Image (cartoon, rainbow, N blue to C red; front, top):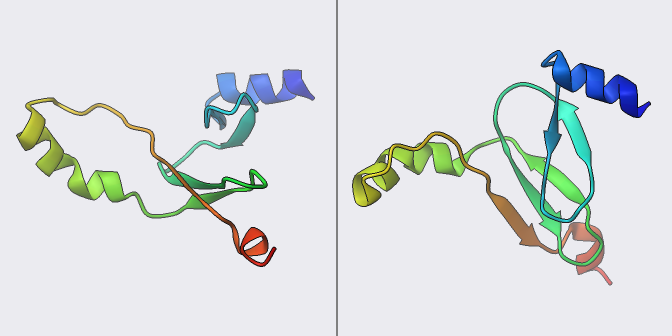
Length: 84
């Protein structure tokens, strides 16, 4: 299975998502989006809207940097963990 996923990444059909927890995650290649991760159980959910993209011009003006990419991981408690 890993060889098949590696092949899909090489072909540009899938992409690896690194959230800094050492787990390999893969999802279809496509439009950029962010993720939110539960600090208790580790559940990860995609956030369809990218708040950084809307702020990129302001960030570039404030820092003088020309942004090329970014990664943003939001953390909190998922609905299930909020109940326990």
